[in-house]
Amino acid sequence: MTKRFFQHYLLPALIGVSALYLGIYTYQHINRHNHSQQQSTTISPVFSTQLSSISTPPAALNHWKNKILVVNFWATWCAPCKKEIPTLVKMRQQWLNKDVEFIGIAIDFPDDIKAFIKTTPIPYPVLIAANEGMQLMQLLGNTKGVLPFTAVIDRSQHSFETITGIVQTDDLEKRLKQLTSSQSPSQN
Amino acid sequence: MITRLFWLLSLLCYATLSRAAITQENLLSPEQAFQIHATVKDSQHIELRFIIVQGYYLYRDRIHLEANGFTLPSPDLPSGEIKHDEFLGRVSIYRNSLSIPLSLPTTLPKDAFLSIRSQGCADVGVCYPPYVQKIALTALLNGKLQQKTQPSASPFNTPPSSKNPFQSSRP
Image (cartoon, rainbow over all chains, first blue to last red; front, side):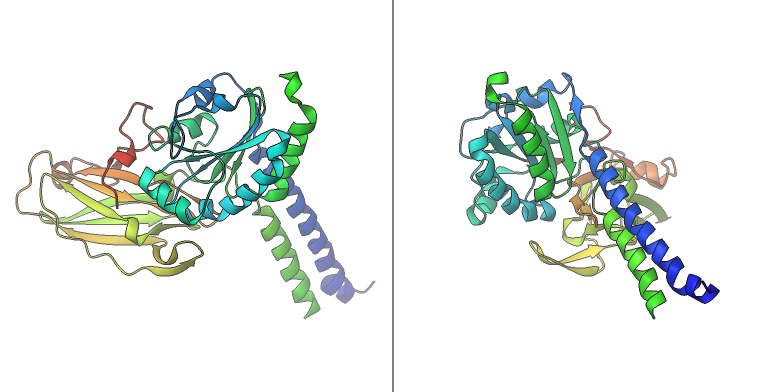
């Protein structure tokens, strides 16, 4: 093996493969931390806080107890939030008959939400949390208060994982498959 | 040529995959990402300076200044950088830093303050809610206040019962 071959081909190739491996490891590692699994009774206000709604009576998340919940915090002033809504709408349709419900919690003003929904219909419940939203998100671990922010909550509402940023379809599907296969409604 | 391609490929692989996920730990708080410093030029002129961390940006049309206890002429905001957003269309944003000179009246009430509302996002794909910071002007002019402003209506470091930023004026 000549020095030239090592410097110009083998070394870059080794570094390239190592970087690829390190990148994959970092992605998986970060993604696992991104989905912080917690069991806590201190988050009970998240489920008991009554929130107003655009088109239905006020409700708290515990209204949907015994369903697996995908709770998506969003706002009309948040461009990435608007980007992920079509994905969530599509996934909701796919998972509805598996006892999974999607809930949108808008950290926003009702008029702005109504105007948005006119152009981008959202078939799942949309609750409004202009005043309470930040505190609810903080209880779920969103210490920086950023949007979009999504919590995937099990049927008992004692355990949840979170996603900061735009939801990736395969990522959420993996989690929902795990929850729907490990828990059946009769177990709660 | 091939050598350079290998190096570029390795850098792209790591950069792309390692940035694929966002974590709370990797994000800055809005106070860290969008710092405001107030400098006194003279008894009637101050300068607000936003220091925006790399990888973050502020929306030009979401910066609002509200005077309490006095009249403030409309600030002259620079044009900013144009960003093409899929949902917001063509928007003007600020990166790195933003300076806003302000003219104050000759006399100010003792309790005069300035509310600065701004809103920004991070390039990784998250946005922060509108954020209000307040400056007590008389104290600033008297040199009693630190030049870096203190956030007041922050939802992140105030008790849950504190005033919600959404109660301030809307853009």
